[in-house]
Length: 145
Length: 195
Image 1 (spheres, rainbow over the protein chains, first blue to last red):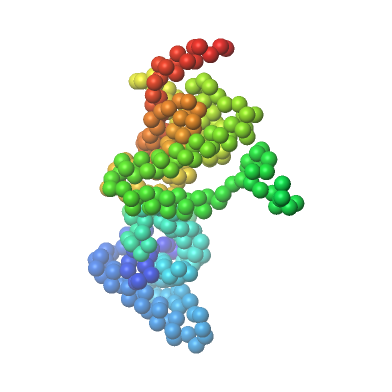
Image 2 (cartoon, rainbow over the protein chains, first blue to last red):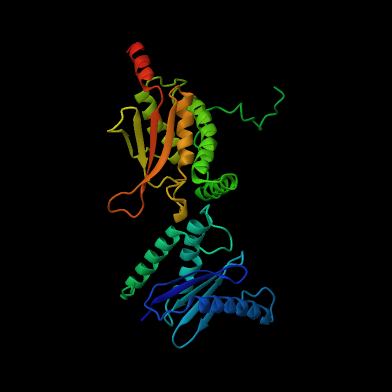
């Protein structure tokens, strides 16, 4: 059954800026999250160097038997990680358009946000949760808050 | 007089025709964000920040009154309080936000207080005020604009912006509160003006 699990945002220096679950998931300790996020950030950088061709984007999608990890690197170096059920359709598209747009609107245009600092925008949170609740509902899976 | 054809200076353009120029919401939001940050780096508390934004808006308001009177009012400026308030509520709001303000009302408690309320002003659209900043409202800038317009028209007032929660809605509305100074003098003046 397709479903969106959670979204993480990693800053330009590999620090975790934001994470939010849209599904009842076993909790990960905050320090572990920080470590995982920066490890993923590093792996994306390495994968770009592995490319035989220049200008590689690095890892975009990692698939496992229990989840998909969509990774999106913006031009300015922020990394978005979206964890979904395996083979959830439209996830990459959603991440690149709607989620990125929400980030640009409600985080970057907020005068109280500083670059590469933890995202504290209430409106971003609110809109993001509403968006993913709507997506999950469309697939007939209720949001477990 | 030495101007070549084709490039017209800003003062030679007709007033009315250059009226409907709009700026992208994103550009405005980024610029406004920078203005807030600039002000924030020069103050030590929320009250001062609101005052700074108010000052920025004040200059805008004075100029807007001038240009809007020429452009939309056939070179006529309102001299009565209610007409002036309507001007702010409709003409100024339309110029700033593309539509009229939702409500214009007189306060129940004090007759020299008027309120304009509206939701989703685009100065507040993308702004999440951090909890530690309490009741700060970025519409202090709009309050400054309104203060500039009113003062330029001869109705000095203290103008402030507040968030007011609305039932059944996630987002609070913004209320611009205008408290007129020398209210009785204004009333006396209006009685002297004929018809």
